Image (tube, rainbow over the protein chains, first blue to last red):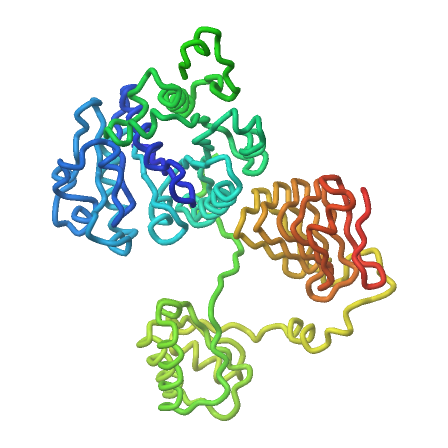
Length: 269
Length: 240
């Protein structure tokens, strides 16, 4: 049976889709057959980040409406073995998703895959609730600033009250993924620190992704940043995936790095 | 030992009540229809029972049948009725409805005599009302946007209360995690209720309608263990 993991945040623009792409790629790289589903119907982005936008023929809504089979709609990732993408529809809105329809698709996927990653839209309405309803685990993506933390807190409340696990009296396993972390801005008190966010949200820390130019570059190129093994962000996502799989990996990139003599001389970053 | 194949538990189910005062077929159908039209999604599929306690006049079996038909056609799941006379109860059972006895009069009494509640003699103990129900214990964090209400009892919070969350009790509130949201104790006018917390960082605290905001709270016991109570109609904050 597949494990269903939702990537959610409440607030928009914090890095849900980037994280969904990176984590699903990371899971596939480690040999787990993974599918990532874009729940952001109407504002589909995942296919862009995964670099498969030109190969989208059928989408999630077509499958729900039985206009296409899952096999037709699933896009096989060209770079990573064992990774599939189920894109959202760009021409519909979030009302096109129904609980019964989504459940049927997830049940069918669960027979073939090890991990199902649900990339949630922003907000706390229907679309976001649909994405988190069936999840067993949740990765809550948060930026180190107060409004993002507040929204994450809100979505955590919804996870533990409106998900299927909550309705069955169980709880969804929570993971905190702190993105766009900039240690030098934390040092100058412009940003909340990891400890601040952990104190407010009180959930286990899955990873801290440093703010990095590599992320924007990767998005524009349509290649998940985890594939950029040189970048700190890529390495941080790899660590996060390892922790998601239960490994004990020490957190990196939390401290401001002092530039070495040569780096300063050459103006390297 | 073999696994039992079932377990019987007590539960309470939320349902709508239709308080029927008198009955006239067309009027009933029209009013109910208008009501449903005002919020169709809200009413569709709602469990409903009819309260006959305030019904005046005679209710014929045919009329009850009509009521059932009207409710069902508008999407309600009518499952029973409550109160009413013996013959009415029998009639309901004959028509396949569940019949429940009339409500205990206690809540109505509380509403009509709010002034009778405070008892000076029991100043430091919870009111009898608070003691009569089991304390509500919340083990998980209360997150932003969530609200927890301990009706007629104390409220114990073992995890944090986030900013933007609201915890409310008719009795006392005990918070063992950080209290960052709003806490309202003794909301049904119980001036003897108190709030106890290990880590006071609340946005607002209130006892029996008297409240203080975050700015005032910051002056004493901020982020410290504290208790909040009412003295001469003013909120006091004391270290624990």
